[in-house]
Image 1 (cartoon, rainbow, N blue to C red):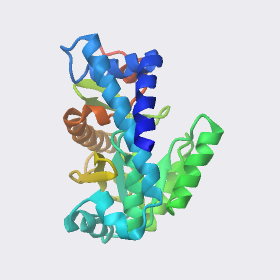
Image 2 (cartoon, helix red, strand yellow):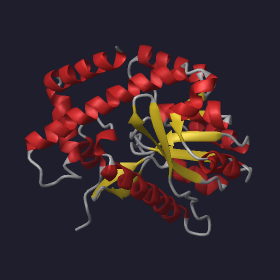
Image 3 (cartoon, rainbow, N blue to C red):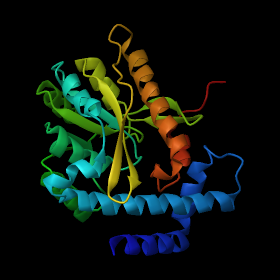
Length: 281
């Protein structure tokens, strides 16, 4: 019944939310520059459908019995050990992802299968009620939350969690104010969040790109990328930009493979253009 409601809701959203539909289509033009507006808007419907499926399966995953967890996630022992091996270095682990796939289900995997402490760094929702619900969901899986601010305190909180050898997941493909670093993403210039690469540079904690992809009803595949460490032997800004670009390249490769899993429901490129300084003459 949940999936039927999700399919109906997807169709209604695609028909009625014209601005959202057009925004998704415009975002996808970076991947499909030669496609017509109509074709891109059909792709937007696939994106909305994928998101609906992800939301439904995430909510179901929250209360999945212990005996069924192995069927919920598709992963190998190497995947599971990767997290514990990186934590064995004692510097904590910065888990970086984007608004791609089911990043929230990743919290279920880390807490209930890997069984490691997790502190999720997230931007506060504009709607206080939505923000409360998201916090309650993270509390349900036993994950701590740091709400991103534009003060020094956020960075200090992250450093404390890393010093405690905690996994700290952060979505990196949207910046917040001056917390930003310029990258090339999907062939275009964009701003990504600077804090993860800065924390890696300051603490030596590795950044691990990780993507949770839905492979069917109630099934997720974990795709871990190549770990990144901001090189502390290079000038700070240069090392941070290189680490951020490495992540942008890895995220871009996943988005090109599964563009319908890229969940940006506003005009992403317009926002980047508004924020980027003019190119030098």
